[in-house]
View (cartoon, rainbow, N blue to C red):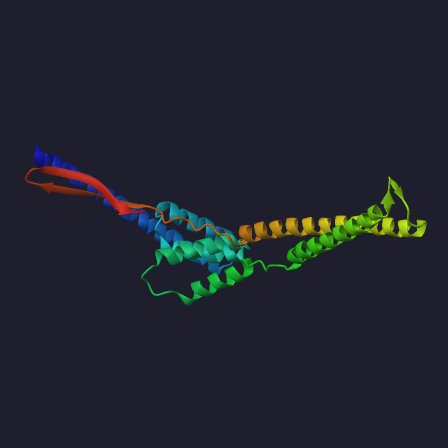
Length: 229
């Protein structure tokens, strides 16, 4: 009975291995088709062929590379960068390909967002302007208050008008400075969000590759799966 069970399991494992080999062969064929489509400038079909290859064999390295180059030609830089980085990740321990490294550097440069100094200028300049305007308004109003006695202003009318105009001007400057500072803050936050969105690229995780195994001994047999994730 034990021998029958071991034989049955061996047949299953051999069938699974044969099926896995067929899938890998078909995946390689899809990659070759993708390369042909890429060479002929049919980039969307090249991407589709790579997707088919990866469905058949998620660890098919060449599919990541060809798909990355095809996506770049289609203007889908973020996805292209993700594919090429995944290819590099799967190629650990293998001599790097200059073309892939150059493509990654090129895509990273395209996706780079240059930081504008305008938000900082608006924020700092607006803050300084608002502080100066507030100081002017408070100073002018304090001088008016110093000239009051028993609730009446005892200075000249021209002095009162000048101080009052200075006070109002200070308030206007304070409001304008505060508006510039808020504008700088908002534009700075938007710029930071844009940089994060543009530069953050999700690299596909390395797909699991699972293979069955079987062990047999004088006390029985065991089966299981091994692979990488």
